[in-house]
Length: 131
Image 1: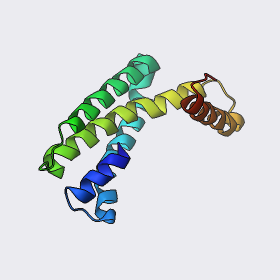
Image 2: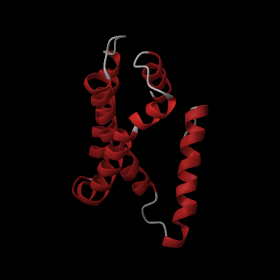
Image 3: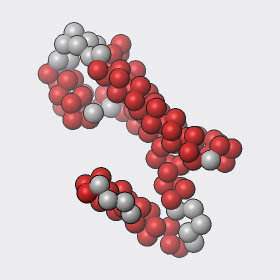
Image 4: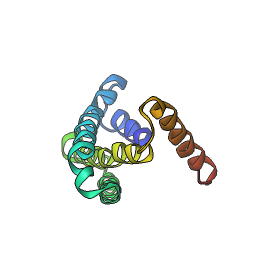
């Protein structure tokens, strides 16, 4: 998404590289707000599964919005809504998933546990193996 949207913004919308980078900031802001809210307020009530499923569904909706881009699309009307929806979806996934994966680990071991989870995610992505 980031790769192709960067090209789209630079080639179709004629954004500079700096402007293209800044155009992704709304996604980051929504992701931070959603992840902190999901982790502190929603996760204790629902558990991780509904949050992760909702986040993935929002990711699908956001990606669908990007399939509707045309050479005449604009940032505010066509790119920004997809970024906001995907930011919300990723916020529902990241913090609850990592928090649940490191649940029950002693405080002094959380850094190591988080690193193991990250390594497992990356190796699974590349090889199709499960950790």
